[in-house]
Length: 226
Image 1 (tube, rainbow, N blue to C red):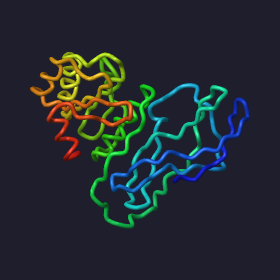
Image 2 (image 1 turned 45 degrees about the vertical axis):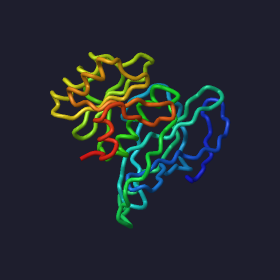
Image 3 (image 1 turned 90 degrees about the vertical axis):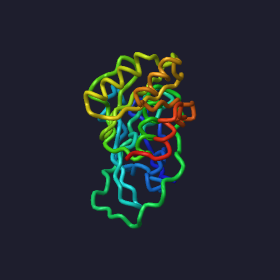
């Protein structure tokens, strides 16, 4: 469990007791951002991708990964960014990482949750440097990792053949592999085209667990990043 801190809303002055969410490191150990009890929460008035993530170092294996920056919704309607301490750059590994454990999903309630769930899953697979993609896809939201381009479609319409082809073509121009995540599934022709192009397809259920749709996704889920 992460340590709780008192957070004051700057708009209505309410006090809240907040504990940061815990995420699974690739080594299997639970990690959570270290909250700064002396910091001041700020209201979120606009969002920028670079501000949505914070570096967190695992105390078990020493890996540092980026996880969603802690946020808290106040009953007055203000969304608060909770202050965190800087990652301990001098922390050293204490043990060898054990085999990858079961994926721990993030419940999907919003489009942002869908992107976060996909990013957490890719990190669990072993991909590094997860960030917003340079090019915006025609549908959904693009995220990228080292050697990989992913598209997350949080809409209620099945992904089309054109959606899959656009992702594949963009990945080809960047010499990267690609993967597609959809909340509403895929049109039959999109699934057939993905198989011929070598694109793993996943459906995100509302628990935040990516479900493989084709054999390529089954293989990626089993083997992880290579």
